[in-house]
Length: 333
Ligand SMILES: Nc1nc2c(c(=O)[nH]1)N[C@H]1C(S)=C(S)[C@@H](COP(=O)(O)O)O[C@H]1N2
Ligand SMILES: [Mo]
Image 1 (spheres, protein in one colour):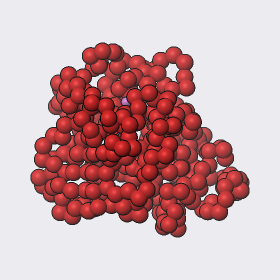
Image 2 (tube, rainbow, N blue to C red):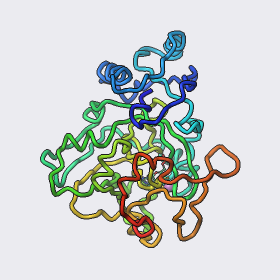
Image 3 (tube, helix red, strand yellow):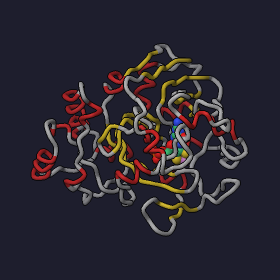
Image 4 (cartoon, rainbow, N blue to C red):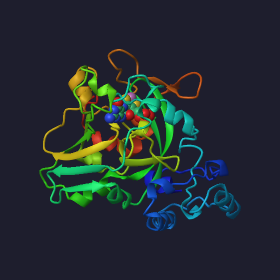
């Protein structure tokens, strides 16, 4: 449904949501339930959307009984991405994470991050903008929340399919009005050595920094994610707000953002600073350009046996290839 509108990719009509994955998004929208709920319905029915997937009445009722109170905000989530690949399970998504601020052990992130406080929270947006602004959680909730099912392809050659909730970064950038000098967007994760044990590691320059070119940042696929599977993000996933750039390697999708700066020079990311020969600024998923230490031609989808072919731009070439017209993707890796 919403996904079709956003990606322009046909979602098979067979992908009607079974009731076990109707989930409540009430946690994130607490205090804004009515607004967000109606906005969501409006988005489903908007004229631009290609025939939204109908939710059968009986399933809506089931969803209502399956969850308390505000069933009006229940969100149906498809079971597969637009390529037909099944979603990874909620359990897989929240128990296998990269979040070096806590640990480099993917299966221990969830436990170590479990009690990390993510409310209250502020995101400061500054730099080359007409209207610099500090967004608190309520400000972020005021953006219409949408579902997006995206493949996440880690540079380490594993991948997942994740149903995110969030809003296009473009909407936030529109709100602050980038000036003509703004060419790049620089993002920073919270710096909190006392509560993030991984930030004591001398191997990296903290805080975690990432960057996008302004046109990449404004692309409709670029998402500020606030939830997944209809639930507010958990700390291990980058609560309360993280970036998701589905056509780039996962490390570009920076977690727990506190600062966004519009700049006129290319930001140096944490990964560029730590290993410039291995990690470039663009980091577009590209099966033809190998990591210096391993092939990027194939990947392991979490939950599957065997390997899959990696797709150019992670399968989003139709939407994003034109951003790189005329660029040598081996040089600009
Ligand atoms: N702040 C921060 N953001 C981060 C990371 C990190 O270590 N710290 N890891 C990145 C990497 S390498 C990947 S693959 C994704 C993983 O996101 P997930 O744990 O939600 O699957 O987060 C990215 N964002
Ligand atoms: Mo990654």
